[in-house]
Length: 564
Image (cartoon, rainbow, N blue to C red):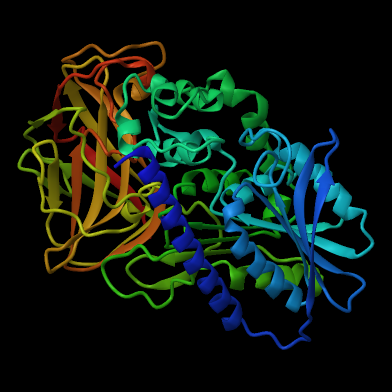
């Protein structure tokens, strides 16, 4: 397929996705009970000048017959989603809300140069301050998902007085967490997004781009020119790097603690921003938390169902009902919300109210890796070794994942292959559970390992094996030896060392009769970049080599989680 054919295919897929989203949004609005007066609307598009004179396309919907009314506003960089924004405008105006959609600088009809993230605070504050001065704007609510939530977080700590609350979904302010896991880059999030939002058409093959080495040269070689902002992403591999500890990303990271208006955060177990969003919620100051809401459900980044093991009746995926509930309370009833946290319980198809987040299990469950590839509740006296070879040129494909966007069909709890389905995948399986196991909160896999490489990766996938033998993933994670070494030390090939694979929190009830299965490997591609097995910054590695990996079983290798 040529680059042109790929671009045309992407365009057709996007248009179909938008058509489906419009139908879905109409259905969501229709399903929300509304007994108040219904209004007609007017639609106006203006070019709103910013402080530096650059004008941004700003569409305004007004309910007819009202002189003053609450206004909901969002700002985004996806002009192709205009049909969806029109649905918001028509439906919200019919319910007595004003609605404003502004296109970010350098995108669509808006003037200026498109630089992702860099202008959202200044332009957002200019726009909100202008809206705050309009007599017809009685009060203001800010909302958006993904990048449209970023534009909200960008100004959350400095909004003018008429802004009474924000509704921000599937995004977090910890950008490092969205970019890296233990120094491994999240290709499927940021490489895919960067190709789609480069500021010019990119028709290169996505997986070829992810595999390109040295990856630092991919933009010039395949994308039509250097993207300076992407180069910064791929070279700043440590949270301590100045790129993350200064400038815009540090400012964004610090905003939740200074935010004073109530915020409704909506996330999902299988959204690629989940880890960042949970850090964002944790960073809110206690006074703001008292009046904020948090929902964690189960869908992918596009609010689509992503469970393959049965029909779910209570997912509550979709933002419209939540949006109306939140802003009707704050802007129409003019009430201050009380703290609320709800989580969807996996395998029970129900929502559960929580007192706080993150959850802390009342006790711990620990399962040890044994040399016969079982998981046991107590470590055996006899230590052992299980080995495999990892070839970066043939990484394990991501299937059943959290941190994916470009290959979004791989997000969710999906049917897994048989145990040991590849030579570089080692499966450890427990005995059937006699009682249900209620996992609540964090999960970790601690491994004692050794390798003949200077640096390498180890990945893990935690699964539930149903009584019928079918296996579905719960969580996946990855780490590198370099990231887990004590400060100032480097790994000596052949020596035993400890690594820890961290997983995002979850609430999941493993059912009686099921087994726990944990797959250990060294790759999960393209959810994460395939480690070259050389030390140093991943994006500068020009070659790869095969690594001979060993898991040391027994007391030093175990899985642990909090349970209720």
